[in-house]
Length: 199
Image (cartoon, rainbow, N blue to C red; front, top):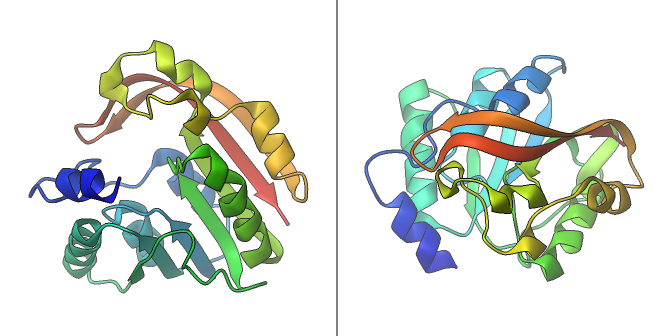
């Protein structure tokens, strides 16, 4: 899996563009800047955006190529992002540390999904916010140009997120069909799910 992502990210062009995810950008504008965590951050588009909005950003991914692209983008935007090379097992999810966390198209294997989500809950401060956008299971029926895992177990349903994040107050949880325009690999009609919740 690491080899797959290093191969995708090593190209000069940004695989998913340099603009932030639209849902994340809209929700960040509603919040007071603080400290935010972005797991599986890829090439850094969302981390860099959050930093430009005054957030102190911690991000991680297991792809060295992704980190290089993220650091390049941060330099262009003249911001700082604390970006670590780590996998889910080795990242230090410090308890009650973050004012917000964002999971943007984070699709770990099914056996790690619950681990990731419980670590996110642990790492949020009381009152902290979770922003999540990911592919719905119905994405399997769509044009592959809009992206997403081919394994149904790595996709999401409303019931799955309600269960995983039952310790949070869910403010909104929606399955939507949207037109993705995020670089070359998220392009076209897509079935996604969006969650906004607080601890």
